[in-house]
Image 1 (cartoon, rainbow, N blue to C red):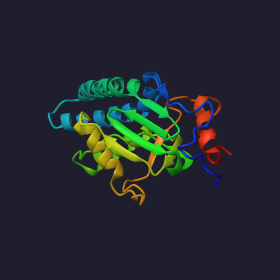
Image 2: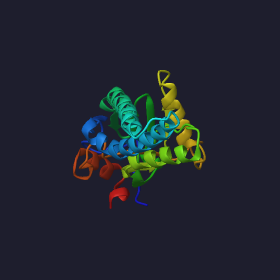
Image 3: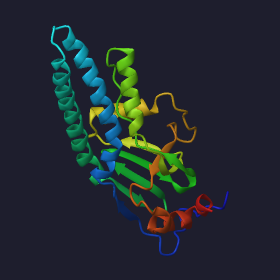
Length: 222
């Protein structure tokens, strides 16, 4: 590994903390949701149609089931949009001689330069999984959640995650779900943490973000 720049010796021109704002738009995030919404719509239509079959309704029950499923899918879409607008536009990345710090929705991840292991692939925390009654329903929900995931370039290492007092119960449960069963890093007592770089600049390698990483951890980009 290349020699690290000590935090006490800032690199010329990169000695003052610099803040980067999230660049992901809801339109970009919505593309992830499409497979999940389609899958949930079809599954909800099937379940509603089968349930309505016990009422003695004929083929029209499938039209009614599709309307119910469409309403459910729209409700989910609106919920995801509200969640996105409440957190992502306010997400920030701060780079400094200390390292990288990301803040999003009350979740703060701190990755000192000396504790970054690699630039690898990572993704946002998955949606909260809840029991939905049957194996088939649980499988469908898991498949839908998996369709949302996209691996992107990220700083990965022995960072620390802290939650602000205002963090919602849902986000706290997501963090606990994400951490469950993962290997604990001996340096921090927490699972390995990741900060996704493309959320703050899709072309991060040739931008200011890339300059920071190259200056303080040239071994990561060589």
